[in-house]
Image (cartoon, rainbow, N blue to C red; front, side, top):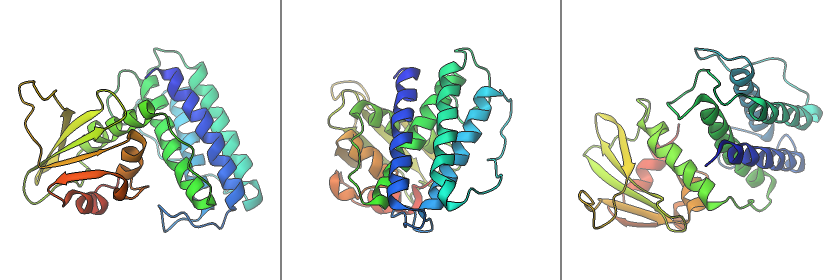
Length: 252
């Protein structure tokens, strides 16, 4: 996907997130994050947007903590959220393509990283806000959702902090049924982070079967792997233990 596509998704989902927060009110519980009320969700994503914008507008060569700052009053939360989101969108639009700044994981470029990461961060939390507000989830483009699965599997769960480590080695195939080439094989071991690769075509060398195969529409796969939807919407064949392992240890 192009940087401009990520920024446009960020723009749209940030607005929808704020709309849902306005409908739900600050005390609404967030189903996917039981310890949170809506105010906690808004404070989190508002701080993340401001934090990310700082790496874009004031390039840095090392990580910085999320900004704390004064907490907005409940009746100011949504406006504060919209302000930080707008600033981030403008910062990404205006940033040079050769931006040099710190990133969490390797990426084609720092600008590509921040556009992609903030689009997915915002989309997942937009789903949280809509679930809290009791309104239907706005559909995500399948291609964007498949990209989010790719980011989660190949970037975040490749990191040392991933807790997806079974007692015995396992291979898991994930496939988005509505998106071309959205097919991954994850290799799980007890003593190292997962290793994920694009699944070869069935006739290609190395296209061996997996212990577990998980299939479904890209959006369902995306939100399920982020623990926002039930595994009931996916087809799981082979070793049935993966959903429990993922729900217990797949959080980041």
